[in-house]
Image 1 (cartoon, rainbow, N blue to C red):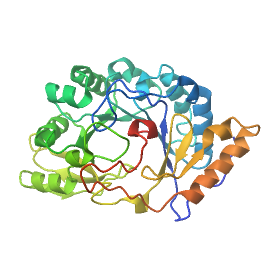
Image 2 (spheres, one colour; image 1 turned 180 degrees about the vertical axis):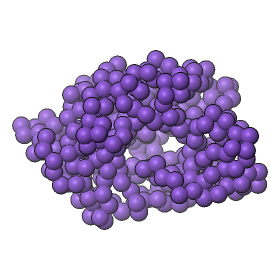
Image 3 (cartoon, rainbow, N blue to C red; image 1 turned 30 degrees about the horizontal axis):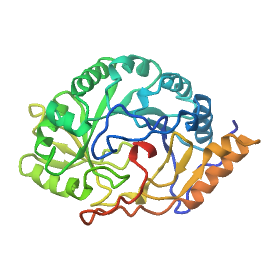
Length: 338
């Protein structure tokens, strides 16, 4: 596929980061993410391995240099590692980084394969170290498998960053201990505000914990120094002085509600069905699956990417402002890609 013009939206933001979902399925049912009886897509609606690969190559040809594979839980897809290997061959040839976000339950099986394919850094979603609390949040008693997976990933040479959704009255008291545990093992921790995507059984107003509150609480116990470190995503970081026996560590904040970070947005998301969402918090979308399955897929894909740049909004408009409010968008995070 020949190189084409870089992806630049109408606000002159260059898109260099693709979050590509390989499945909407997950082996956990986290209360803030999806209902217990979540209905998943028919497998026939999900892009094939070949289509996912072709789509990724189309993005790379337009200047995307970082790809994060997501889900659902990406490692529950049986042919996932084959895609990782195929994309890994583009590292150094248009692709600077290939990574993924996972819940960690399958990591013990796949950590070595991921490293061998060229993955060097992963994000693992972990909201608590308390087994009973984990089982209540995830509706599955899987914390031992997640911890085993994290250990296997680190042993395989993967750099692990933990992602934690801050939940009012649930895991907020355990955040300092989770941070200390992560830093003691040389891992970063990033805190995330709960996002109003999809219907769930619980009220997100009750779950919502502003990270401004969390940061103020942490500053009562720790020295937090703003950091210039950037990972390519929306997180903003501080260095924590006292953790890891005084060696310290890094803490990130992703604040879609309390501190909009859209001005520097460099990414788009593609679902497992090939729907490109120009903004996580918007309805603007382009059907890449239709382009891939058209009579002239290369040209159709490039035209669809041009359209995505035309419709990408300046910012999202997330809000959780009252109890009982409907989610900002009906689609679940597992559908959009974490």
